[in-house]
Amino acid sequence: MYSSSINRLIGSLKKLPSVGQRTAERYIFYLLKSGKKEVTELMLSLKELIETVRSCEVCWNFTDTSPCSLCQNTQRDQTTICVVTDPQDLTVIEHTGEYRGVYHVLRGLLDPSDEESLARMKAKELLQRTKNNEQGTMVKEIILALNPDLSGETTMLYLEKEIKKTNPAIKITRLARGLPMGSDLRYADEITLGSALKNRIQR
Image (cartoon, rainbow, N blue to C red; front, side):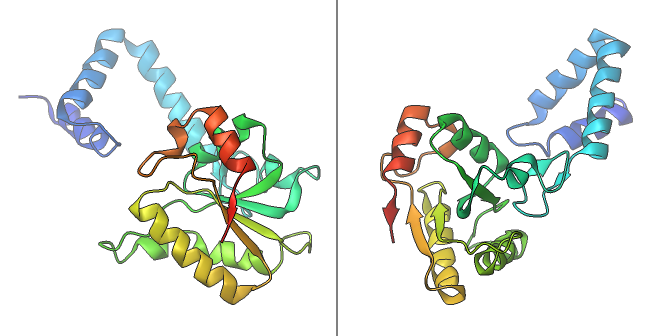
């Protein structure tokens, strides 16, 4: 029904989260009806994204510079690392204004049904940081700020075990149970999340 170029783009858009056939079609025909200007702007933005954004060599957040501005900030507490799943979770925690340490972005969680999930997760990089950070300062606390669902709990248990093997002296904490079971961290309101950070529990 559609041209091969449209079908190809539909297939590409369907790889994005929450984008199905109809949503992909709506996006494409919106762009086609909008004219070349909006399509060109989108193309240039994507080109800039690919060319300038990279992974921070310390925390694995997406950034324009490596190390990122947070990791380079000498005013941050380098002895405390807050572990999050995705960059969006890091942003949510920063907006609370309650945390002054540094971060580590796992880029994924353990999935018992996916044997490759551990290999994709930046767990080895975290364990390396628990030995010594870039400035030679010993890490004193790891905050496991993962979603309190099945994958999050499985990942936190794994990390607790491995961190204790690497450095038994490190204090491991979780966000307090102000966050309900099964919730998504990035949709929590800032007051609830700020309270959870203040009242985190030690494992």
